[in-house]
Amino acid sequence: MIHETTLRTRYGETDQMGIIYHPNYYIYFEIGRTEFLREMGGMSYKDMEEAGVMLPIVETHCKYRVPAKYDDQLIVRTMIKEMTAARITFSYQLIRAVDGVLLAEGETTSGFTNMEGRPINLKKKYPDIYDKLLNVMSL
Image (cartoon, rainbow, N blue to C red; front, side, top):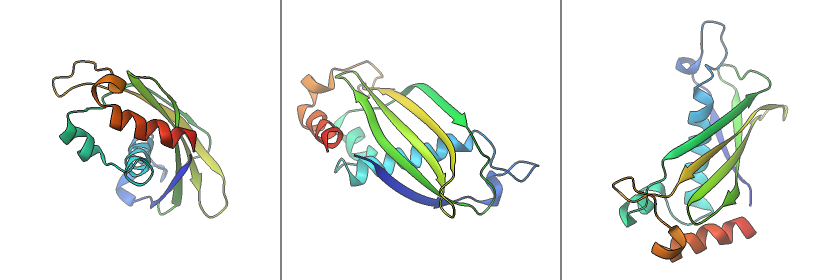
């Protein structure tokens, strides 16, 4: 299942050339991931943390294709690419809303850990959360 989040770039996110500074793309990915979980998975990051599940990022990737600029309206397309009992990988496309141009695409992989940062088997320890995420993948 693909989820779309719309946002508008802000002046403070630009560099001297008037384009969005490259680390901000990961913030856009985070917004997409957070809204994906809230709207598609039926739980927020906060809900997962309160249940005892943390999702630290263990790997990231972004391919920048066309620069985003100040005041662009962007669409962040987010989906679960793959998931195991130990990890989840989200993929993203960042698209300029006005013309549909693909600006960037990327991935983040998070491990499932407890509050102390120790890896957990989500399927065994929190089967309800695992099943919710698995169901979203199959839609």
